[in-house]
Length: 295
Length: 265
Figure 1 (cartoon, rainbow over the protein chains, first blue to last red):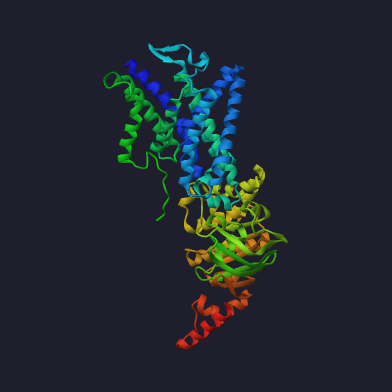
Figure 2: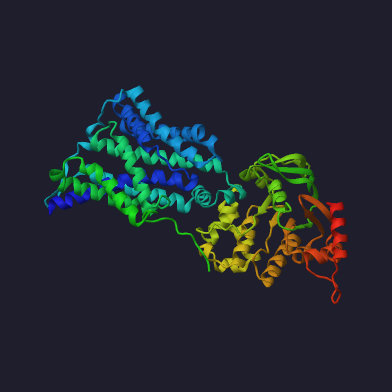
């Protein structure tokens, strides 16, 4: 029983992290209708940047994290401005393929600057002791994972629900032509979306990097992010969160119970199996956006 | 106030939609633009509000001037900031958002303070009391008439001096059309908003218009004061379906009109 609870908690933690990556994809999809295939490369670059400030330059933690945030914002802005903005108005497939190229571009960049070697974040987070609650050992990092994810998701929801630029984003998401017509600055909305996307990726990259180390495997978390977003219906926040939890828990449980029987690769494969099965029954994911039809 | 000087609009550099349209909207007046489907009415409005580019259209000749400043080629945002707002055809409410959010969305471009926003919303609610009761409803579930009120109200939130109204009567019951146009007339009188009204419902538009233009095949074929147009035989026959009662129609008269129309167009 205690193993089960342990696996569930780590599943929830991992699932929320996937959900964050997926929300990055969803945010971009909602307002620009571009399926963002780049999270792999963007997660890598975010992780290596955070590592550089934390370990290589060895700055104090708040300054290092602050600098990482600033750089992530800049990357998000530049990606939108340089790569995607010239393609506004062109067939959407061009933008989607371009995001795929962005993935490989940043992947290549990490090889160029950091040699592609695995690195470790300092142990002040990952090295924390395991907490014992009623005899169930939970690594403290998992708890931080859950707390930070929930805080970020709440912040995101508040931003969208209660601020004006969040409203501008929702307007753009719903009808670009109306948004333009109302005098909303759409290019600015697009910039903001990519910046938010990159901030979410930075948080994801930091936690995944703390748990499993920074290596080219981070790529894979990006792929999971896209899968979770698809499962959740691409346009829905709750969908992405629930899909993230489902994938995280299923992965954690299969890793815990079936890895011994079916081999270690099973945990990496289950997200795809789940995706495959769900797409049989709900090809639009858990929560596609409901179109309002009045009769 | 607004002067369109012999403009020509092409879509995708090939399809010539407007071939020399000249329209003037004087300050504080209501001008209506009539015509059948495909005449180029909506294109004219889009040319003014800078909304041609989503359809890859362009003003290729002539000029559009607003208070003496050329506005053809400007971004929509700049044009909205100058005080021209287009109410698009087909009641484009943001259906997932509430009524209140729809209204705020109309003001985002101006970036007002909280107090101003509140005042603007009260102004809209005073013109459309029905919206106030529904302010927390998802706008997609409103009735057609309320949705039309909402989009007009949303346009009002940007403090326009000139409102371009595209087919406000589309798909509404006659009584609702009357109601909407009564409010539009009030907007003109009380808030001194100039209006360019595009309509297929000639009766509704001409009743409130100071001046009217009739379009056909991308050209203006007729223009006169609203009252004169209402009395015009051709308008009566072709846009209102009124003929002299009791008289038999003969092909001769139709031919006569066709010939004349070709002359004009």
